[in-house]
Picture 1 (tube, one colour):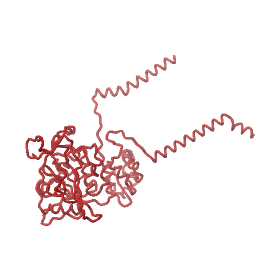
Picture 2: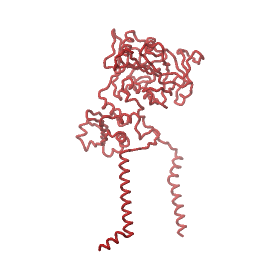
Picture 3: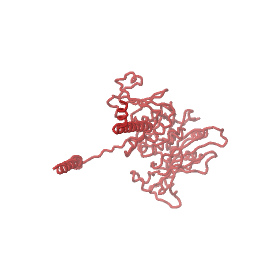
Picture 4: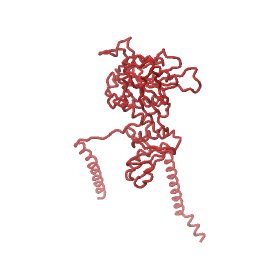
Length: 458
């Protein structure tokens, strides 16, 4: 019996069987290891034109810097879960601190009541301390909810009023309602502010003051209040135009900014690619600055703009840096009221022309750790208008500038873009051709193959 067992164990058939078993176990082990690696290090390739199945740089940045666990809950009927998976499942892939939970409110009413769910397709972002319903199911709306949950209460941004500034409530072409909504979606509270009083003072809760293209000049007490606010570490966003009031440009000059009245003309022809003209110059060149570090290859539009540059008359402690310029085929003229404008060699400023800059104020005698004043100057008040804000990179540049001014540098990035409609409209003739290619050609191949088979068989 022992000899028979030894013979069987040493037989060729047994060896082949053992080898096969070993190879199968080895293959199974490789498959298990590959799956473990794939689950640990997920890599996807998105070939869509607008990166529909990828997270934006801003979302990826925020998720990669998470310091606490975040749960994203999606409330909908179970049959509809797959509609949201393509988007929501990207969040935990980017960060292991994110957990996505799908909840059917009809099957789990207690959880739905806990988060006050009133409708299907609702997203809730929750941490251990607080939770918030997202305003929608798009990537941007979910990301903004994550920002609000992590940062807590909103910071307050005041828009100066009383001098013909742009109206943050106006939904007209030149109004600022879209800018207000963009700020509120990013965890800022927007309020109007009038300094038309005997002793004007900017509120203590003001994280940022926006001076949005005043048509009338500011009074001396208002100028003094803004100057004092900046010198004490305040933050101001100035938007000027070719006929900006003299006292305002004088204030800017004290902080090292030359924003005297001019009109920028762009003759590069690039604007025609975007449907604009010579008086709506495009910015395509950006300097190395936190506000613009992610803006390369992104065009921004500055309609009816005035040049902003460095002034040699700034006070000590004030530094200003132009950070966005037009192409070299542009120029700035002081003929802002002329009906016919032409380039004057030796008189007009040749391009590239700066239209956007950032500055800071901190005196040499300031105490260590003292907050520096920061300011942004944009050469176009229409840069944020409802009709213009959605252009290419305008919204990103605006929100990046606000983030830098309010010391929210972690929010500086390129934000999610709306999905593009990529439908293909076919004529009846084109549809017939598609049907022919999908049905007739495969049928011909199959029939030909059968013919060859039948001939060889015979």
